[in-house]
Length: 177
Ligand code: GDP
Ligand code: MG
Image (cartoon, rainbow, N blue to C red):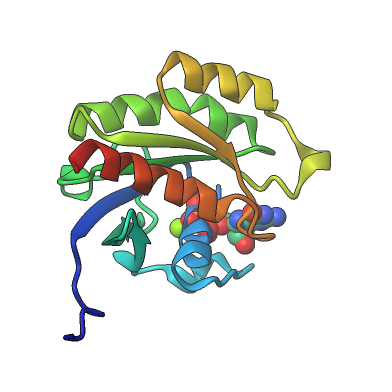
């Protein structure tokens, strides 16, 4: 038999959105390289990272795009959203404002992206439970109303990061296959 190790069956573009400092870059570092840094400057300038994994015996390359500090309202350009089939909409469970802005991000996402885009609402920094300012229930209710998947994660402790991305990738696969 031949060497099929480089064969890619699908490439899925996923975008990370949400307020600055919620942990988007660290979620990506955790998922793509199993790394975490307390220094948020470490990933500036990186457009996207990839990780290839098997879903239903197919090789799926996740191409995950990160904002390079363009989180100011409406500063993320339409090129960023173009071709995206999945999105991780991230807030920080300790920063109420980052959750209050989720509706705005969702509106922007829905204005730019494909209407079948798979969206995961991600409440990051679940390791900081004592500083929590957004309840799990509030986020769950919002996600249900807006038809989003929902998980709380910790990029720091690597909690739920893998399941969050894999849920989105598997759902995209289900839609396109
Ligand atoms: P971004 O602006 O959304 O890309 O946020 P970053 O990924 O740069 O993270 C902002 C800050 O939050 C950095 O100091 C990270 O180390 C920190 N951070 C990110 N994820 C977590 C997490 O899950 N738990 C904790 N405690 N800190 C985190
Ligand atoms: Mg970042």
